[in-house]
Image 1 (cartoon, rainbow, N blue to C red):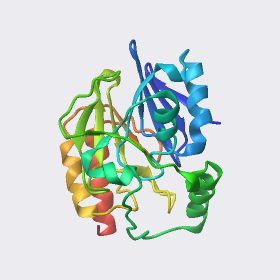
Image 2: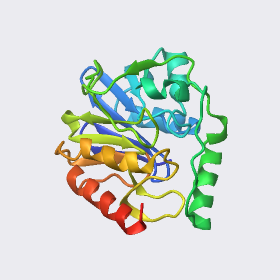
Image 3: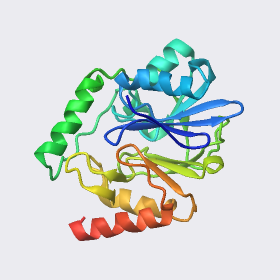
Length: 244
């Protein structure tokens, strides 16, 4: 079990294959993304290490509605009455009403097998869709610990968002970019796989490039602490080098 405090009030659960994050404030905890269903035990353990419990979780904010980001969200909602927020354009996706099957693209056998095996071990094939969601829009600042600000980041999915939390100097990007390609194992900021519209996803990153946040926190890959501007520049270089 891998748990991690990145900075005061900023925590990660999971690993570089699939990660979710916790933002702590005096009024409770906000969970950013819900990883895989089997990461529930890591959520509980990290909260305990923080001196918190599930009763301190005030809300979940999803960067988008894909299965490897909604994992334990419905359990939190159903068992602990925690509201789950998702962009209105991905609400149906999070509820399991629609899905997308973009091309997988290039792969390396070892990295792809590690991704699939980890997802299998963490109940990634048994994800429970959301029964209810709270929809959000671009520009909203949510009444949750850390006052997360919603920034539309369409491309990976229609309702992909970035979540800016100035109190922890971080922007959470979901699959708006990755720092470790789950299908190839290549590290460093780059476009994420399984993206509905790669060109739109790349263009959307300009919306976060001026935030000034030090932390850029993706759903897959190592936490990035080199600043959002540099991360976006590296993604653009990687895309150009690959011909994307």
